[in-house]
Image (tube, rainbow, N blue to C red; front, top):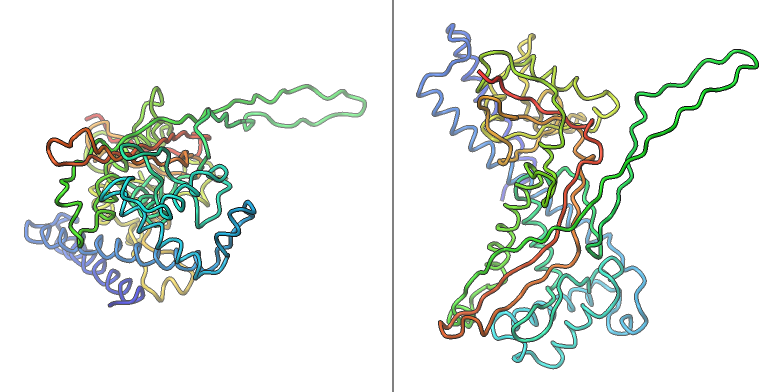
Length: 432
């Protein structure tokens, strides 16, 4: 298996080959326009580089998760619960394994098939405290009881579900995450005093008054479902069938798709406010730039964001737009897209970037077209994603019994709002 260092070096080589194709077209006087054969090769190199980037990201996330697990500690818990679980890593792993077995038994055969010990184990996950107070090894992620109802989800499953949501689309990777134990409306206070300045006073001159205008953004909790997934009883009862993995993929991807779309393009009325909707105009492409952008547009877009926010800024764009940017150079011939290798990273430079800023690929951002808001730039920490920490999974056993099937459906609640729209700007392609 290749190391992260080897993967980064391989990615850097692919980007160098992409740059070489564009350089060759410029040397031959084609002004960066690739031939059919060259464009096909460029696309293959681009796809391979993107695949390596995803591999590197997964490796880095895995290493981080392992480090976080080693550093994790158990917060204070109720005395009754402390007697059932110690803070040792062995006991945590043992409990997780027992919870997973109990959950798998429930998925396959229903509540009635669970042993008394398994029922007690999972009941403890619902009984103690709110989600924010639960200790790591028993954090409740579900609600409901009974053979045909909801059930709590083991930490391993819930963690995989959460990871799949974060990997889908891009918003969760850069937004400010705000988990809450319940779904009540949360007013988030805001203030913009940037238009006001102080004053110079002469001797014995009274100071003027200048009020501060406070506002608020209200975070709600919109309910999402995965829709029903039907599984045959035969498939459920296969001893080698990993139902947990299948459920994770199906349910998380469905919810991940719709929530990322709303976090990106949502109207804010009856659904989350999308980051594109919240962003302000940063740069409009010149006439004729319906499907293109130039290096000057990138610079203008960056400088449309106040310098105060720029140190924490990044780009967000569709993959097709990223591909176009990979062919751009600045006035000195420097490539705007950089994929730094291990030596460059060791020297303090960041990973793949656009003009020195990191980027996130989000396929819900519009591809470049007439009047399309195709590139976002800003501090995405000023966009808040709220997750209500109740994750409900229902097992619908009786409803599809005549077909020999069991239905599964997941419910989650979320919202997304910009708490400072000045920190995020968009580039819009020309109308014609």
